[in-house]
Image 1 (cartoon, rainbow, N blue to C red):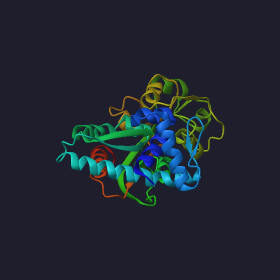
Image 2 (cartoon, rainbow, N blue to C red; image 1 turned 45 degrees about the vertical axis):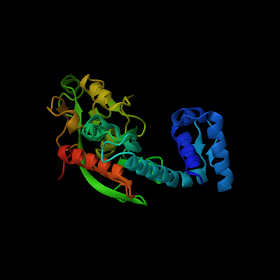
Image 3 (cartoon, rainbow, N blue to C red; image 1 turned 90 degrees about the vertical axis):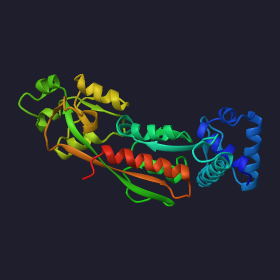
Image 4 (tube, helix red, strand yellow; image 1 turned 90 degrees about the horizontal axis):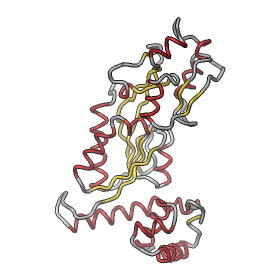
Length: 292
């Protein structure tokens, strides 16, 4: 398998179309298509489903991780050969996945450190921390902020710390819906703010409290806007301490806490660029997340 063919394969998966991959590789769509055809002939199987967006087949998924590793190592080696130290003329691209609340809070410091070094092009994907490890298994990303403490095959894992969530609401919302304090009967009626359909924070707390009736829900799939909706009295929600540092929101009950321990999983390959990203992520997390 030729390296240029593998690069074309990775680019089509990442960008979703042959045309977008061609633009990223500075090729024509027909040249990308030809490389994929030759690669599939060499592999003896169809690797891509020609859907919109293009998706890898089962065997294509099996190839994706190895293809990305080879392309990454080739790029990093070329970077080292072109220049000395961190003054390399080219950047190594590293796709990672991070949950929305981390992106909105502590992860910005990691981004700043990586950007200052200047030799890594970081592509941050956003996904739920409970499913992000699946993207590592498929080869779509090289590193992940995840709740999974058991390393994915071929990956190393580091504990980052705990993001602590508390049930909170605005003062006006609390006075209206919980004048005598929150209880299961009132919680069954009080509106809640949900991030998206994957969000189990609020419903999980209600289940623990024995609330079986589903209250009205508003979905706000943006971390900052989620907290903004809680502040505006749209509903109550589980808010990370880092997003309410001054405690201006009302804590409904001190015992209604959900700690989420985060880990960093990254490919176990000899890569200076990946090591630098890992150091930046671990450093930012250590300084801001709860380490108890």
